[in-house]
Image 1 (tube, rainbow, N blue to C red):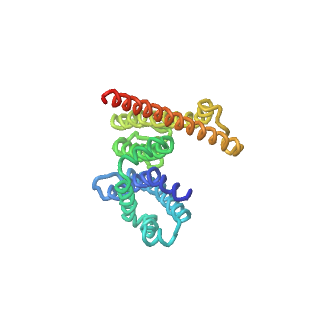
Image 2: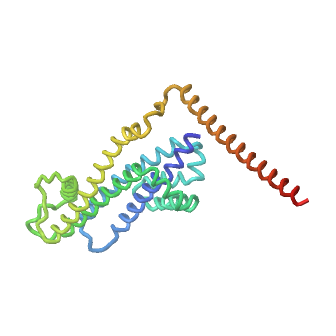
Image 3: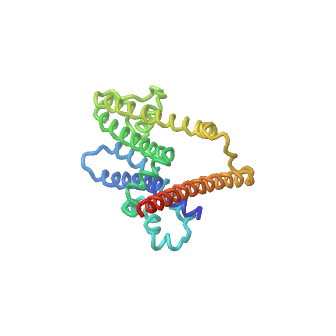
Length: 275
């Protein structure tokens, strides 16, 4: 039962994360066929696709290892498509992951998804941050190479340079060994710095909330027994609560019976006076 519940929760956080990564992978595949794109900029896309392929290998292994029935997952739940999607030349099969995410959303509805995201904000934010970091690194590296390719004095000339510069920039380290020299490249730098600072500031806030959450929970309910503590104490507390609720119900019943008796006596008295 625990395993099934765990997989249902992954459907809304992890599945949507994989769907977003799949959409990016398919988009990257189509981007390679756009005419006029610099080859070095495409190399950035190829490097990101290699990282995404590692994610898909991990995803397939996780699904196969945690599936209640491996044969059902592989044959009837598009596990074979997940396996084929691992192959870079067959990235088109990653559309099946998008379809599965759509099927989950359609099955449970938007209300349940919003409730899940609200109750699991930390995990959801972590997935979003990972997707955002991948998007910033890819788009920043791709655009800066497109902007710098015509400059003779450019020092960002390869996909490795672009990815290194983008990552150093969004982490606010700023070694200064790579930097854009054109106006278009500097505009890309402004966008990368702005989004990077926002993403990593959110990540730092997420880590802080996760570290402080257990302490805040203990302060809100100091009288509750610790998790995994004495079961007898918990059972006694539950029994006292049941007794208290029962006494309240009995008191309410007694009060209503008394009111009913008073109304009946009053009705009989009025009837006798009428006679």
